[in-house]
Each structure stands twice: as C-alpha cells, then as structure tokens.
Length: 197
Image (cartoon, rainbow, N blue to C red; front, side):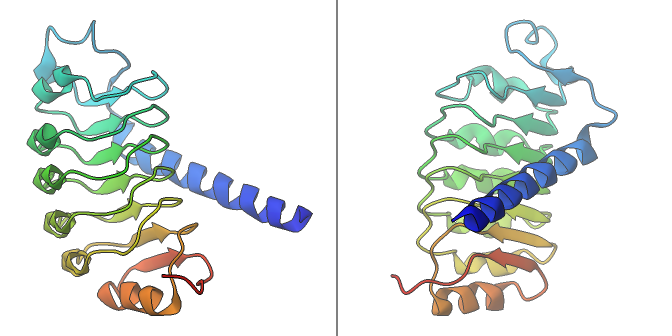
C-alpha cells in the first residue's frame, strides 16, 4: 500500500513539474496579469493571463476581448464548461484548465489554430470533440486523470504531437493499442490497461 502511495505521489509531482516547465516556455518574456478588473483598459496588450486559484465557476467574458492572448492559465478553479468563443483567441499558444470540473470540451476549441500546449488534467472530461484534430500545432496534450471513454480518431491529424498524457484513465488493451496507432510518432503515456469497457 505504501509503495502505491509513493508511486502516485511521484506521478503527481511529475505531472505538476511538467506543467510548470511547459508554461515557463511561453512566459519568460511576457508581463503576467492576474486579474480582470484592472486589465480591461488595454485588452490588446494582454498576452499572459493567470487566473488560477480564483474560485472561478465560469470563464470571465472579458477574456474574449484579449485578442493577443498567448498564455491563459485557468487551473485550480471550479469551471464546469468552456464557452464556444474560446476559439476566437487565435494567438493562444498555451491553455491550462487543469484541476477544474469540466465534463465536456466545446468544439469551439478547434479555433485555437496556434495552440501548442493544452492542459486539461484532473477534470471529469468524458469526451474530446473531433475538432481537436484541427489543432495542427499542438505538441502536448495533458488529459491525466479524466473520465474519458475513448480518444477521437481525428487525433491522428496532429502530426506535431510529441506527448499525449493519458495516465490514470481506464482504457483496455484494445483501446490503448488503437490510441498508440493513431499517433505512433508521439509519446503516449498510459496507465496499465484494465479489463473494462
């Protein structure tokens, strides 16, 4: 039992440190804004917005006007859905909605044509829309610890994908092989298969 707890802590720490380093990759030369109320006078100047740990239940509509946003961190909130307008943030490179209460992902996410890293770990997501396949610049997708039933075949369109994090999700052998076959060029991280589904 102690060994299992130790392994879980190591996996959790590894996922956390990976997310931090991925975010730093895009933020080193950007001014970080941490609130909405003081930032709305010059929305075009905002490129990095960190609203993590704010107790948010929805995405503030003001974000929609931040057309030059490149990094958006909404992790560790209570957000239950992503609005369709998220796809209007055409300059977004890094999006984190980790550790929220998401169950579905809007097809509007397919509009994020410059997205490189998508972090959706520790949610309740059951389904990923086929529109994920339009995000051709994606290099990393973190879906660790969700409730996924499958991964859409459109993921095979992501030729730049390097890492697909799917640990702590119950997939059987057949599903795991199918996922790997969709993206043989990527590192697919999976937990041991189950006799399920």
